[in-house]
Length: 223
Image (cartoon, rainbow, N blue to C red; front, side, top):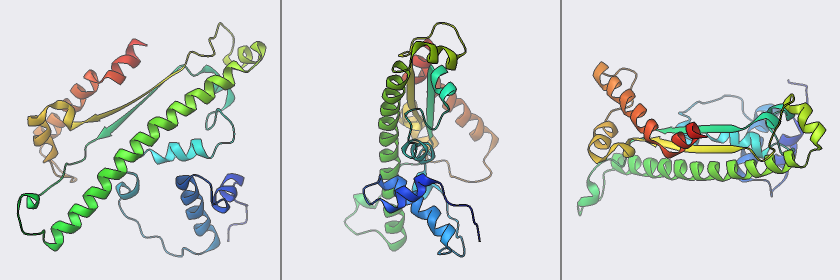
């Protein structure tokens, strides 16, 4: 019974067969909520479709019709450094049936298929996100450098400003960056609401160590 029309970009994306697949799927999903096709919402773990949580920003960027979107013009004009740290606490492939002649059981097969789809999804989403950020930086620099000097000065609030001075750092922090022995220990920790205190402390310390040594983070601090 909602009366306000959907945003123009949603209408365009869901009706354009050549729109980016991620953008069109999102627009079609929103449209199904609005037109009553979906009467009851069934919720599952978001990791099944976006385990790194990156698609929201990608959709925001893809849906924008201006080079600085989803930021405002003043925000985009002032921006100098951006750091995205993606935390990967996923477990590696489980089970040892790959070492045996006999095939996996039904439960093992379902877990393997789900795990393979999940691992493939996160790798693809991370790679796509890196490409999106590279393209966005190029669009931002071109937009800023194409502005009249007086306009850029006004948007930035005064002071000297180099239109090309923009760097976007993207880094992934994971157990595998802590060496094979510790990666195996952390990878075996179950996903649950309650964990031993010493396990939580070890995970926090490991995350801090991996971050401190990460080249993207160190380059961000240096810059």
